[in-house]
Length: 223
Image (cartoon, rainbow, N blue to C red; front, top):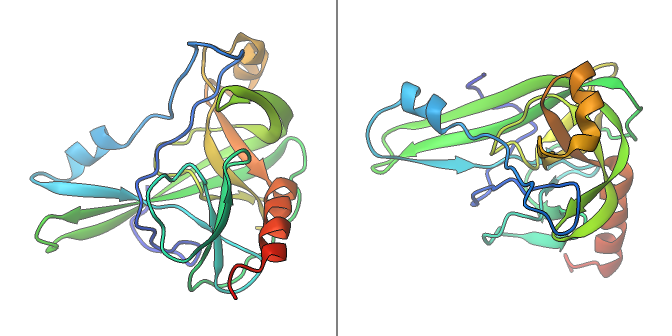
């Protein structure tokens, strides 16, 4: 864990809740990514509220991209696509370099959580980083329907990391956005777990994010 700000993040007034994935439609084989509540209980005591607010800088200045499953209102939202779980927001930010992921390349998942006391006398930001690999595109159950908009990857993520960038270790470019986790009850991925570990992360790849932005930009909602 890291506790300092980095340029890839900007605050969103929202609570992120990881979506869930499963093998069949419908299904009870559902799981959410683990949270940080146990960690926070060891870190601080008293009345605190947590704001999970991860986002990625886009290819243009002052545009960020995050997960559409943020249900709360986000100021200056430009557009969203709930089927592909992508939301664009106009906010001060430097641009980032993006590209398509390469199967089985090493990546870093980055997320952010802010802890704020009720009297606002205590404000702490914790970064969460984990290592893994993006594996490949696959069909997953999402919002009660099958979709092939996502990639799976190995590596551990937690609540609050949704919307954060997936960065390639080779060149530092962003290759996607963190969405959530694959249920451990999805048996067809057991061979991946045996090879790469029990945690499988879900990623919105660059091509999908770009497709949402193209629609957003065409609508020209900033005018």
